[in-house]
Image 1 (cartoon, rainbow, N blue to C red):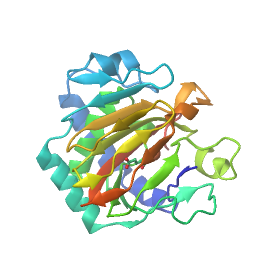
Image 2 (image 1 turned 90 degrees about the vertical axis):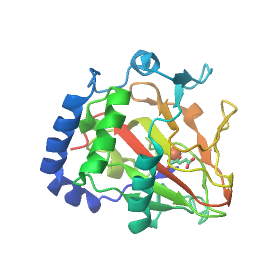
Image 3 (image 1 turned 90 degrees about the horizontal axis):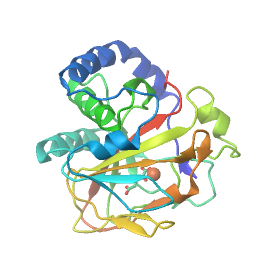
Image 4 (image 1 turned 45 degrees about the vertical axis):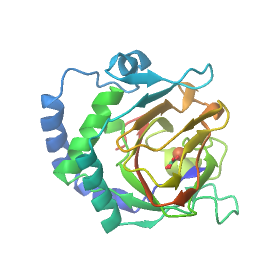
Length: 243
Ligand SMILES: O=C(O)CCC(=O)C(=O)O
Ligand SMILES: [Fe+2]
């Protein structure tokens, strides 16, 4: 079970591709040296300041607090608030309450969003061409995204629809933009790790054990917000260029 992207939106993003690549080139050029590979190198991620690796044999998971500053988070929240739709999932399982949040497709023609995208790519050390457009997710009280994986099930009905061009998802980067008054943690049940939302905190994990081999230990649950509102951005990289 995973979230679903909106194929109809892809045309829109393609039309923005020229602006996107120009901004990306600009921001990538002012960033310190970093890899631009097809896949992230955990050693690169671990080498950066203030990066913590969560001890686990089964999942490669990093946490970087204060990856974004509060002003950057607020500017992203403004964009998410202005343009959101009900979140969706692939491989529907009949549970209408599986993912109850709202989603925003951030506009990569917006130079600010392009700058955030470049920062994420530099952190991962992945060529931005492998990234899906960044999404924002918004959870109101009682909303959640039940335990799921971000990769698409290769045996699932929706695999061809979502993965025939760019392959499966490789890495997930996610940044908390605020801190709900209660609830809203991200739980990784297979490795016994729960991460609390904190403004600007980034999580990065590898959804595969090896190329082409999804990792079931990447299962995670965006838990119910109990008080307040939670916003995050999610960035998924693919095995092949997004196109
Ligand atoms: O909101 C969270 O804590 C998790 C979000 C998530 O897993 C997703 O959007 O795929
Ligand atoms: Fe997820």
